[in-house]
Length: 180
Image (cartoon, rainbow, N blue to C red):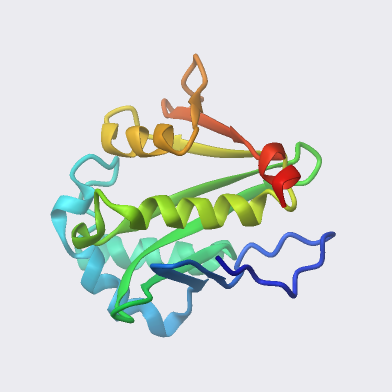
């Protein structure tokens, strides 16, 4: 796995270039809107999500604009086919608390249940471990698929829901930092 080696240890780049065996991750750009919508327009991707109509053009356009404005949105590309397969995001970086959120992730159904989501999260966790002690995932209580996926990569659920009724999962990154 390659990481963006131009990173300063003092500055968390929320839009790094990351590459693994199966995916490449790069900053989301305005000109990615149509290729990402071609993935997001599948209603089954959103069936367990709180915004279950995000597959519609109107809701996707809101999501896409928010993603660009966040400063942490990433595009996910299959390295074998060069096809856009999804998106994810770093958000809420808190230097004082030494934590950041990973979320807003979705992948094409053709890339579910295999190596792609795990590799995406591992790349993002490894990058985050250079800057924070904890990565947080907020997941809707009905989204069992995402909860299981985060548990598979070491996420531990807090006993209480957050103030928006979401499940909160945490992954400490210090062990990853010590391995590097």
